[in-house]
Amino acid sequence: MASRDTARAAALSLQLSQAHQELRRRLNDVRTGLGRRHSNDDTLATHCLAFCDALTTHHEGEDAGLFAQLLRERPDLAGTVTKLVQDHGLIASILIQVRELADRALGTQGPDLEAIGRELDGLAAIMESHFRYEERAIGEALDEDGDDTDWADPVFRFQGRVTPAP
Image (cartoon, rainbow, N blue to C red; front, side, top):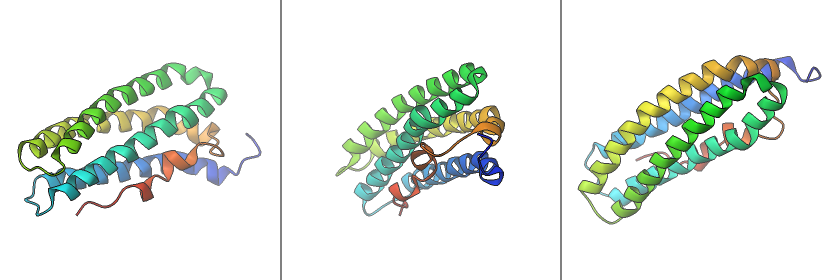
């Protein structure tokens, strides 16, 4: 990887951090929206589903692209990557529950939105812990060894896939 642009390499951990920040912001928007009285709860549930899709795309891109590339360069990070992939599995199971609740909430009001809010509160706590660990554990390796030629789009450029919350 010595032929890579050093400035571009150093930007990978920053891009990862920015992608995480964008996901945090979007989750916060959905959570904030759930706490307000809306004239169209279907729109809110749709935004919740869009957030779930963006987070899933991000994690699938990490699992299939970023982590695979990183392990080719840094096999010593296998234990860290295993933990991160396990976290992704836990988060995916929460997202399944959120999706089911959001699907049920489409066209209804009340308890389903409250249940979504409870799930999203738990998701926010787990996501925060996961994102901080991931940034600490692989940020330096990304800057030193990361190559983004094949995996960057789903990990960093998911932003257009999520419609802003009302």
